[in-house]
Image (cartoon, rainbow, N blue to C red; front, top):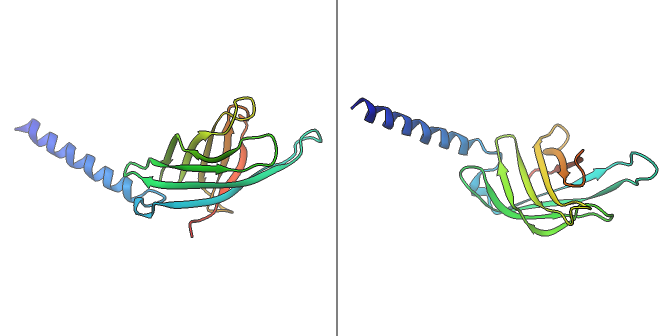
Length: 147
C-alpha cells in the first residue's frame, strides 16, 4: 500500500513539473508556426579580416511540450562563412530564458555544424553567440521579439 501511494505521489509530481516547465517556456507551443528574425555581426579583429554580418531567420513549425522544436534555419552571409538557406534544424530547444538551434552551416572547413545559443537580452529580445566547427570563439547574434 505504501509503495502504491509513493508511486501515485511521484507520478503527480512529475505531471506537475511537466505542466510548470511547459508554462515557463520562452515561446508557448500554441504560437507555432512562428518565425524569429534577427542578425549577426563579426567585427574585424585585424586588417586581414574584414567585418562581416548577415540576417538570421529561425522558422519554428512545431513546439513540443518538453521545449524541443522542429523547423528550418536561414543564416545569410556575403563572405566565406557559415551559410544556411532553409536548412532543417537538427536540434532545437526552447527554455524559459532562451533557445538553442543546431543546424548544418556548410563544409567543416568553412563552418560545419553550427550551434546558435540565444538568451534573453538587455538590448535585443534574444542575444547570443554562434559557434561552429570552424569558429569556436563565437560570433555575436540576436533575434527580435515575435510580431
